[in-house]
Amino acid sequence: MCKAKHNSIPKHAILIANGNLSLAITPSFGAIYNIWDNHGVPLLWQPGYPNESVTPIGGCFPLVPYANRVKNSCFTLASKKYQIADNQCQQPHALHGDGWTSEWQVIARGNTWIKLGHRSHLYPFNYNAEQTIKILDNSLSIDIEITHLGDIPMPYGIGFHPWFIKHENTELFAPTTHLWHEDKQHFPTKKSTVPAQLDFSSANKKLPSGFINNLFLGWQVNDKKQYQAEICYPSINRTISIQASELLNRYMLYQNGSDFFCFEPVSHDIDAHNSNKMSGLKLLTTNQSIKANLLMSFNQI
Image (cartoon, rainbow, N blue to C red; front, top):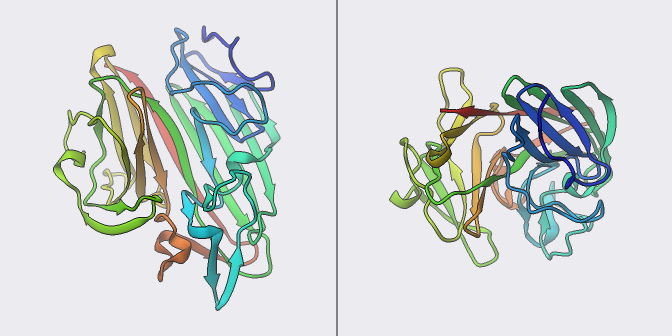
């Protein structure tokens, strides 16, 4: 079994493991606190949070029923204005939905997998989410499915928010064609082709230093029609390969420090609720669902 040191994880975390990987899951946020290899080396960035009431920063958490920000926490649909209920983040703009701030219930579990459920009444959304987290050899697989339960159709999205460790020479391969620029409140202003310093379409592209907070579009697929990316750590001969399913056709890249970055596969644009075409959101009627998968493989090279 894995030799991970678990003495620093939250008290109520649940551990799953195989011979290659070990995961700590915190149902209080539906989150993966961290992942360790069979030598106990952490594979995600995690500064730690002191108790079960603190919203997580680090690890990997789900973004449901939408990703990123909704301006002024409101949107108009079919000529009716909807004000999103407080999602406990105490910000003027709704952020990441309520999946990452809510208690998830354990539906079932085994030694190498766990299934979590979240019944939400985050107005105006009324939905059920299920999340299945599995270890497959040297890979982590996360499935999320959202089912709309309300009588009035509502727009939904899905995203994943992993935090990765950054070294001085960390490289990223994640080919795209365009990105959104942002204003001071982190809302999109204009779309352009990808500038050279943020073009990760070829191997051995070093992550630049400084602040990054851009949504990337036109993410290229592999021969299995999965969206692909790879993080490379040359100094420790390790890679993290990422594959995202069809719904997750764009990603957010966030960096605000020297020791971490976030690579977030998502299904829609920032503030898509207030765009003319909903920009990737799916309008669901009663009992309709959307689902997505994220696969991360951890390899030595």
